[in-house]
Image (cartoon, rainbow, N blue to C red; front, side):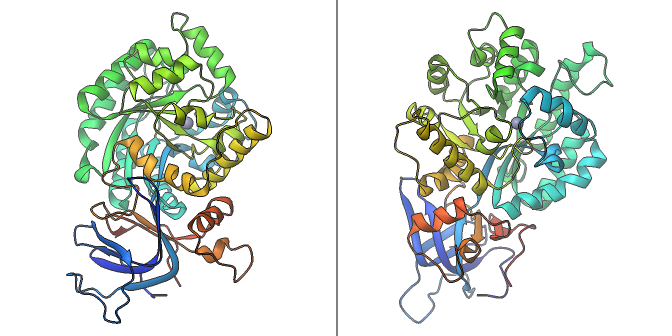
Length: 448
Ligand SMILES: [Zn+2]
């Protein structure tokens, strides 16, 4: 295996390559050649040439041999809370609203600028080490902590869409008089969007982030959605995660038909809206999500950790709704999207065991697609990232299949078997390197 990994483009890699394809299906090259140009774009994905002479690729760079590592597209995490990372793995089984009050609001209250400057660089390294190259994340309510988080993402190199949490009901921020919370939150969010949305040719983007209907007035939901529309930024919030929350939303918004209708009335639904969870939905809500092309961040490990519910994933996919995966740390215990594929697959198995789902089970290559290309489609950036295809940015990870082998020496060149072990036996060190636009990200340990 090559001793040094390329830090910036151009470069040529020799490795196994496994990727979903935009036109459908999967590509696996047991011995592949990947070329990346000086701009960080993929210019070739092909079998390693049989000719003993290394082909001229215009870069003049000799290929770096990473075999037996597997190159995959970088994973897309559609739902995670930056300030909550230090709490990951704690609080299993509590209901959502109790968990928020006991663990989360005290933690987010501390997420000021200094805390963000300390945590965010480590957080982005941890995402890269988990194999995530694109992240859509919530911050806390404090504007300066979001600037610090964006600065950290800018320096690190990860693709990041971030948003300041907006709450004008039951907020943990008690520094402002109640009658100024709404205007202040809207102004600060608009200012953050103006500073960061589209930075570095779209690598950094903004998401207006009202926490969820329990924490927001109808005015907050409506005005934040209007800002997202007028700026072309995203709008993200939570939907129908657990039963207690659904009941509380019904109490707070008696005029709404159901939970989704609260966001619909606010003008929040549409192709640049990402709703996390979306478990406890009526048939009307599923149809309305499809009709408005609103996308879903499915967070299976979180849903099991807090016993929130079992996602009827097949129902959403059958309706044509765009769905990708989210770690939802720290309601989810792990940043790894691979670990979330496993939790998602077990959830679907559980539903089948209970006789509640008779659709064809998703296979390992379906889960790979959900964790990468479908996540990019949810964000509307699938022309840029989410798969290893010519013309796209080199957003890649290199994974060591030896770390997930059931026993030393066992290997496979069947793509579904390769992916199955990565999803069902993820190892914390299996991601050895990660690149965005061909620039290597700090975090993964590298190759020996
Ligand atoms: Zn969440």
